[in-house]
Image (cartoon, rainbow, N blue to C red):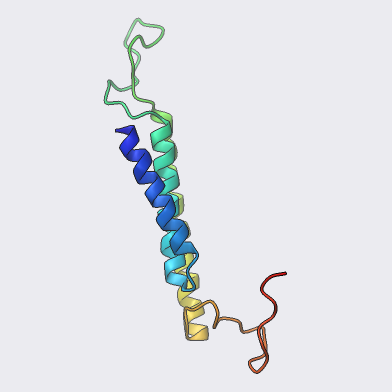
Length: 125
């Protein structure tokens, strides 16, 4: 199961990086969301997936004797899901506002600081 999830996480990272390299803002935003999901799945997989008993110490015992599920990665992922959703909503509003102001979602056409008649500045050295 962990091998299948590791492959799926790798696929998520590949798709996210591909989308984030796009010129269109919406694709970049979708890449960011998929990247966040890949990070969450990485944390979940690193916490070892077990279908054992919950981590509850029975009465009269000082420690747990058997293998139990680790609750920390699950708690971290729940927090990360809420934060990533709010971050995505904020970025979506920013992208929509930029589209309203500039009339495009292409990053090459969003260069409002440069004069229109001149060539683009050097993009690399």
